[in-house]
Length: 163
Image (tube, rainbow, N blue to C red; front, side, top):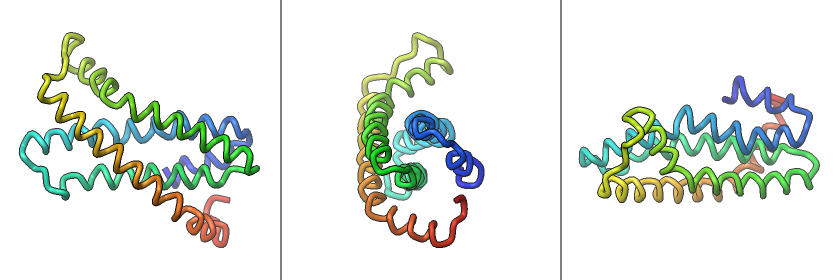
């Protein structure tokens, strides 16, 4: 992402284009490359009784990249008014992405197993708990990235990699 996609983001001259990137392409990229696959692995680990913290670090690792990159991209937008609008719209899009995790996972499962598939009630409850932990972790990382990003951007502008 950092090597190939971030330079493309910084070449977009339209603020609306950058907003579309943040609200659509960024979460879609991380959902395709990380989201469903990691949730599936976590769910398998839960079914096998592997509930120690170590088994949940994969989702935290993936979320750190997604959240840190999104915050960095948002903070790089100019002027300040556009950045403020982008942050609000991005958070609304994240709300939509977060609140549709289980229906998206069900859709993918139905593609794989047939349209009549539905999660059994016990699996649905366990999946709901796992998604809740994922969303709460992402929210904690959002707060941490709001504090860390200014320092990261300061270093980036001092030794520019992409700009």
